Amino acid sequence: MTLAAAVERASLQLGAFALRDLDLALTCGEILVLLGPNGAGKSVCLEMIAGFHRPQRGRILIAGKDATRLPPERRGIGLVVQDFGLFPHLTVAGNVAFSRPGGEIAALLRQVGIGHLADRRPASLSAGEKQRTALARALAIRPALFLFDEPFSVLDARSRAGLRDELKSFLRHAGIAAIFVTHDPEDAWVLADRVAVIRDGAIIQAGAADAVFRKPANRWIAEFVGVETIVPGRIAGRAGNACRIAIGTASLLSTNAVGGGDGTVLVCVRAEEVELRRAGDDRTGEGLPGRVIAIANLGAWGRVTVDCGFALTALLTHRNIRDLRLAPGSAIVASIDPEAVHLLPLA
Image (cartoon, rainbow, N blue to C red; front, side):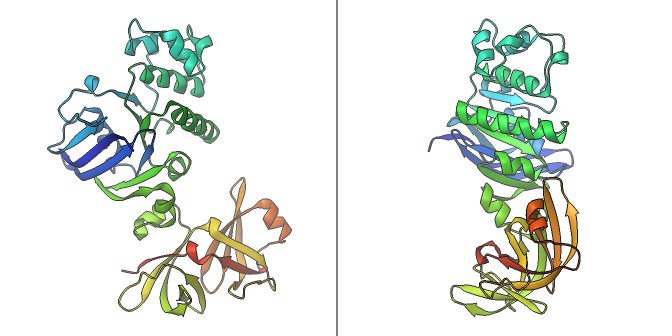
């Protein structure tokens, strides 16, 4: 695969804050999400790639060329910022023409589906129309790479969900690599081919999106990406190609045999991986009997907390909850695929 961009062992000191030995790489057409809490260094990293800061060590590659010392305007980067950065006094066409004077603006507007808005000003546009205008302006420079700096952070949940889907479809169609900065794991779930988790100026885990979310490298990452059940356990033996994990008076199976020297582990289970059935309906004999503690309404989903000798969280549809007639005190059996039981060293 052709490399679209890379950050190689880059370090940058800005006052008391530092980016430390960052390594990132993405191929053409790939979407990389840089995920981390506020203050982690996400935007500074994006600004460094864009050319607004020069690393003291390391280098930046764009389309296979060393861009470390190039000014921003010569890097071939399309940048979309939090509020889309549109000029309020210019029309849609004027905003796009700012990046490409004399270019074929009408064709760009048609490409992103806003040809009919050419004479409108940003104040009269919806959030989706503003995003499309910002994308057209970024496309006008014929970028080798898109950079997105939390463009959905000020939007309501409904607008955010719709624009995420639109953006992913656009990027797939355009085939242009993109780095997307966010503090919201849901953005990463929807958009990312690969995820890099950043904390205190350093990348602490990077890989395929599914691997990062389902196999976090430590407890902090597990909590940050939304793993609901995180409990201590102990490796108690083997069962075929899996190990048996004792958690209090309960036990479950995992195909991940990581553990400390004394067999202690941290057991991580995502709520969507937990299946609940009515008591007495245990087809495998490996189910965990328990009782419902609480049910919380999350809108489209219900979060069910059960006591299986330890607190276990499941994410179910409301229809599942109704069909199982679940309520606090209901007797249940919980099942988890051993592949979905992720283990970490306890320390």
